[in-house]
Amino acid sequence: MLDDTPYGELLTALHAVLGDRGMLRGADTGAYCHDWRDLYHGATPVVIRPADVAELSAAVKICAARGVAMVPQGGNTSMVGGAVPDESGGQVVVSLARLNRLRDLDPVDMSMVVEAGVPWQTAQAHAAAAGLLLPLSISSEGTAQVGGILSTNAGGNNTLRYGNARDLVLGIEAVMPDGEVLHALRRLRKDNTGYALRHLLIGAEGTLGFITAAVLKLVPRPVETAVALCGVPSPEAATELFRMFQRHDAATIQAFEFMSGTGMGFVLAHIPDTTLPLASPAPHYALIELAT
Ligand SMILES: Cc1cc2nc3c(=O)[nH]c(=O)nc-3n(C[C@H](O)[C@H](O)[C@H](O)COP(=O)(O)OP(=O)(O)OC[C@H]3O[C@@H](n4cnc5c(N)ncnc54)[C@H](O)[C@@H]3O)c2cc1C
Image (cartoon, rainbow, N blue to C red):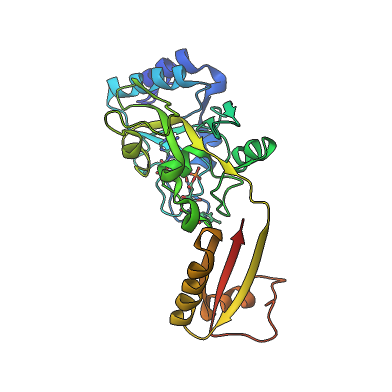
């Protein structure tokens, strides 16, 4: 047995599958047991870091057989503590960080197969290297991972044009709670066969299984983009401005974000080195991005 705590037998079984590289114990688990805002705290007997789907599947079977709860963790950028173990000290944290491969990118099909632990920004860079765009952008993208973004059905700046994370997923691979692997990495756009199980896993916050890889849709990179920050007198005026762009050429609206004057005031007052790029403050603002 690895130690004489109540978890010794569990740890020994996990070690046989994962080895030293696949397990963190004691003080090394600290960063995995709280969120980045330090609002949620917990404890875990072990953080496991499987190297591939087979290792994760075997580890899930070990935990399932012993009735041990598991908490998937991606970049741990969540705002609601879903990636943090509870205070019981008995939940196993599963870091997907070592499942970080680009399995395939097809520039003609405009899709790619990426593993769950790939940071979103890295996935974006893979798409850019092929002259394409992975059209979801959030400010946590340098740390948030593919699995976390899909599990939260994240939105971001370009939802208006491209939808939430769910709308970018053609297929999925996942390890289910009994350790079996769901092989559904379909990339056919006209696929209308059977149940779309991927849509249950997307947005499920890890409650239904571990996402291990996904087929993501890519789009052509815009040739030209234009960004404007407009001061508006009211939310109604912002809506009218939006309708004007819709009437003119709805397909070019890449982003349209409404910001209250109060929110902008907080930014200017509390974030160092921020300035308002307008001659004078407005009651509200609309940040608009157009692209063709
Ligand atoms: C500065 C900042 C800006 C943000 N902006 C946005 C935004 O614009 N839109 C938005 O929607 N969110 C936003 N967020 C919230 C957060 O970044 C997103 O929810 C992101 O999708 C979480 O990804 P993650 O890899 O960090 O997931 P984590 O925080 O690690 O996990 C999130 C949830 O998914 C589960 N999970 C993680 N990986 C897997 C997996 N492989 N399989 C199954 N379950 C898994 C976890 O258990 C947890 O319940 C922002 C956060 C920050 C800090």
